[in-house]
Image 1 (spheres, rainbow, N blue to C red):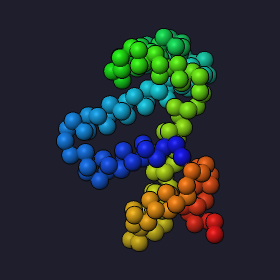
Image 2: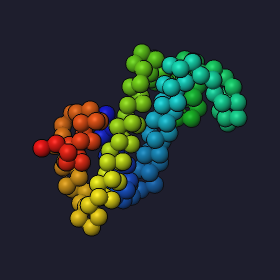
Image 3: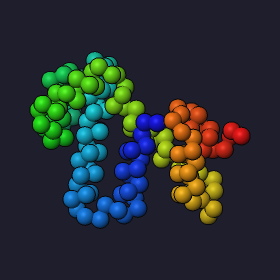
Image 4: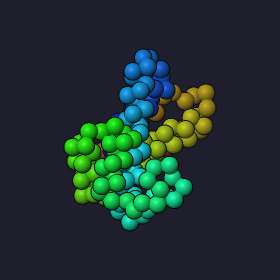
Length: 150
């Protein structure tokens, strides 16, 4: 089930509903927050260092404080909120990543379905199939949307 909300945000942008610069800025700011959270989640849980040639904190080891600083500096979160977010990521490994993986899976399914169906592709039918699958894992969603299950 993770990823549907991110996919819906992307879809609103693709369909042109972010018709005010303020809406686009909000969408991009949220995208930056999500990119930061994925990097923090992976870096902290795998005990990695920031690459030495990175523009932000080159060579530093990932940890709580660096994660908080990143969210404050790059995602513009208040420090208290940044602290609560990093605490959540550290207590729930992979949760922050799951949203992005789910979104990517839905986009990939849509692209594959568009290629398969050609001129017969309709976003409405695709979205109906995704929603009809219910709260399922990505493997089962893939099978349902591809029509591999009866």
